[in-house]
View 1 (cartoon, each protein chain N blue to C red):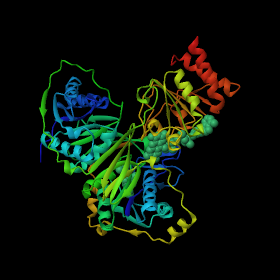
View 2: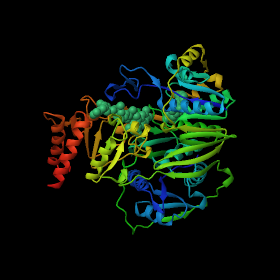
View 3: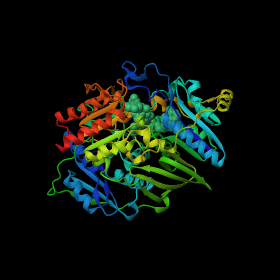
View 4: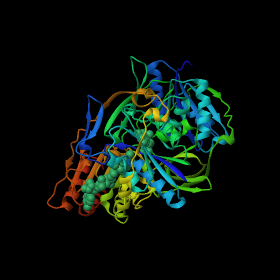
Length: 265
Length: 332
Ligand SMILES: Cc1cc2nc3c(=O)[nH]c(=O)nc-3n(C[C@H](O)[C@H](O)[C@H](O)COP(=O)(O)OP(=O)(O)OC[C@H]3O[C@@H](n4cnc5c(N)ncnc54)[C@H](O)[C@@H]3O)c2cc1C
Ligand SMILES: Nc1ncnc2c1ncn2[C@@H]1O[C@H](COP(=O)(O)O)[C@@H](O)[C@H]1O
């Protein structure tokens, strides 16, 4: 089983919302004081790949597209147990939308060539787009199953439990296929010391657009099919009235009184 | 190039009825159609959809394209993409609206890539730009920390809408509309996935989506047992119990009660958040609530930025007293 996992570098989505800022000149967002991380759903996809590798053996190749990729961040899949890392790192990949992202990643998977399964997160924490997996599948002509909570591989077939609003569906698909992964797959494992040491020794491969057989105007900002007209932070009035009291119990009772007085009850 | 015009809404049929999200889609679709002087059409896809088609017209569609086929009973990516591609190629709408739910979030991106156009998922606002006449697609990104307004360079401009973000019209059963049947023409052998089982995790009591009062707990509840106290309060208020993601991930509660960006989107009258920090992703699911009330031991917790009333304190002490007082007030 050879698995490709797509995982990106993002600003830390778990940093307190108060540290979120948009630089209006560049239309880029940052989390003040928090270093970037690998995108959580991409990390769940790495965990899914490792579970499959534990059960079936094989090789895991992680692919990350972006600019200013911090090696200590993007190497996390390696320290968790992935075998190889491909970086699509070049100025021309910057500013991609769902279309140009899926296109570049799909072309990169073609170059990796030897795979049975492509895994993505259900949605990246920055774009919340939820499209890359479906896009890659469509470009490559592969079937796609989204929102996996469990994946079992048997004889070239994946049996996928797919999250639904009121439970799950069990879906079977013949490989090769694309599967997107949800958090119900289980907490990503921590890197082990051994994994961290091994990751240190692995040099990521860097592919420019020409390496994956595309023109630089087909990727990143130049390859977009959508435009961002506006990016802004919603404002909250934020006037919470605190119920006080000499003890927490009294404060609790006062809270009940307050909502009664406000006729919410 | 085809001449794309009109607003189309993908209408989902659930147990023979039009899904609520589709009535919301028709509501905003009607507005966009009116603003741009175009026709609103419903695309009704499923098996046994006659009743839902009537509803789609009552909810505002000028015309309904109907694909009724036994093979469309269960949603599968390949069959729905194939059918929708066929319909879109025939009617060439400028805008296609779907719901951000199980079907829409799977179908919209696949269909968009298949058609060589774009999709924007989870829109909370849609409008026609008066100058360019393109669809302005407003969508929360960075987990809700920001809003982005996108436009697409290609047609059809495909979007999904967030649950409860748009308002349906009042249905009018006397409305008339043309109904056009389209043959599904599905090649069953081209469907590459097989649904072998469907598991529904029933939750007792009022459904989260329908509840007027929701009592939700977060990681700070600390255990599955602690949720019994939330159950008690919910029962008292005739509400339902929900959670942020960690209690579901920890197996304290079923995954189906997760509230937020990747869980349920709800808008009850009253939302009581206990030991929930109020991450942007969580608030995405409950910020439409009329009133948010929070109990959290951290005065800096982000939940207090959106709550109307709150208490800073340990829920183990605050909550029992709160519940007792509520009981007393309700009795008097
Ligand atoms: C793309 C993406 C999608 C996501 N989707 C969702 C989603 O749909 N829903 C969701 O909820 N999360 C979602 N998350 C996760 C989200 O970022 C947060 O991690 C999560 O919401 C935190 O849950 P919490 O508030 O329960 O936990 P925490 O942030 O750990 O907060 C626990 C709170 O409990 C308080 N507390 C602890 N003990 C007590 C006590 N004894 N008394 C009173 N207060 C106490 C603490 O002060 C703290 O504020 C998503 C994340 C990503 C990246
Ligand atoms: N730049 C990227 N590099 C690698 N993987 C990506 C990139 N963008 C998106 N992905 C993958 O696609 C998933 C969904 O992203 P999105 O469609 O942007 O929500 C992510 O969780 C990743 O697995």
